[in-house]
Image (tube, rainbow, N blue to C red; front, side, top):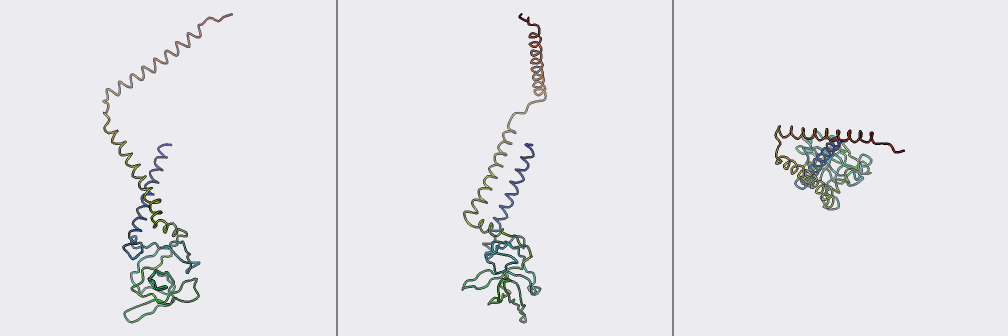
Length: 221
């Protein structure tokens, strides 16, 4: 039972470490990639508004992938791109409703599924980040957004990783101590076993003698 419990704890610890590393990579890669996390060609994106409801909603996490050829994008696909909203350059994720081709360039007219009109500005080729893969992890975006805060990163990433490394350090020290202990020779081990057997037999003999003595004691009338 102890071995099973120990194995489960070890597996959970390594899974936690792997998740912590992935989140760490995502956080730092987003800082180097215009605010967009990048993992092996895929981009997890936290949804901030309900403009695409009910396809996905605020607090969800969608997975994007890089666009190899912009000219293969079609009407109906959902893309993420930079645009200007209220004077600020922000990320937006909407559905393509029209493909605009201009000789050597291309742009896309977009609209949110929950909006009654198309976006004011088209999505230009240089501003497109990725295309939605269809994967939607409901509610996960909120958790990831929290992990990106200082408190969330410290509580959910730094502390668990510190505990993991302390546990591994303890295991290493224990193993090191065991290695430094003098090893008994085969003769010493046999001598210890022989003494243990003799002590056991002596105790059993003493118990038998006591039992016999109690059986021979005179009975008072």
